[in-house]
Image (tube, rainbow, N blue to C red; front, top):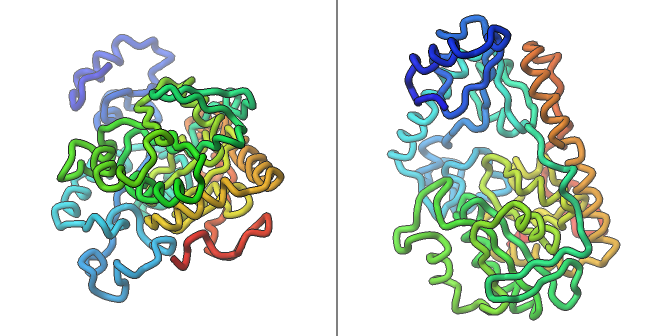
Length: 391
């Protein structure tokens, strides 16, 4: 473990390394700013997970051609900043993201090659550096992910939920932490409608009460308490189960008992949980944002819903539960097939190829779907517009 910002720690590391390691080293928990000064002959690979961008100031302030209150978020041409009209962007936010990007820009200038997990995440970086960045997803554990018809979970209240139980279908939601960036507020506001329309559906929610992105609510300790204060009185507590953070094996079983998995997100880093849900064979109900459309096609391997719209999200969950067995099976099989090439073996090969071959043309990229425009593709006889698009 190296001390952050201390180049002398890098010199100590170099002295301790065998000679054969001098040309390739992974620095953990340390910014790579001084790496080239110590390992002058090493190829430096920079992980380009995210680069923050903001819309023009007139968009942020609600002026100009784009009315932030009216624009369909499916067509939002920017990224996460300013996306959710419920949380207006301030000038301080703009200054903050510029400082967040500063070290990233230095690392982009110093590195030999950059790696982004998806085309969307790569595209957020300045055009001057795009030729330096390859798309190589690190890979998920597809070998150990998949359906289990015998999967069972027990909720904190003692409720036993099973895979493929027609009497107790399970809606699942997973995030590292429960917060608006991953659509938790929209999800919670959608649940009263879902529980009214589906009297025996249970909801299983996995995630912590910290903040990974964005900020804490003003009137509560965390977003779980904030949303329960807003809509908790409209929910059936016997069918609403908060699991908190769970071990990975328990998380896998949650996905395996799922009848409909809800993945709501801003246009931001594509979560592993989305890919893991697809690899498990979940029927995924997801926000129609650019990163999601890179792996999910409406009606083909999932259901896409209009972002930040509680009615659309509710309609999507209800539609997923109403699918016939053969329709659900087609979505599940297609979802698993879509992420089959994104396993750990392929991920390791992609990253290693980037280390050996710095030329962009020689670095393999994973196949991606073109960004789907609303209403262009629909399978299984579903209507051609996104669920809730006109809501």
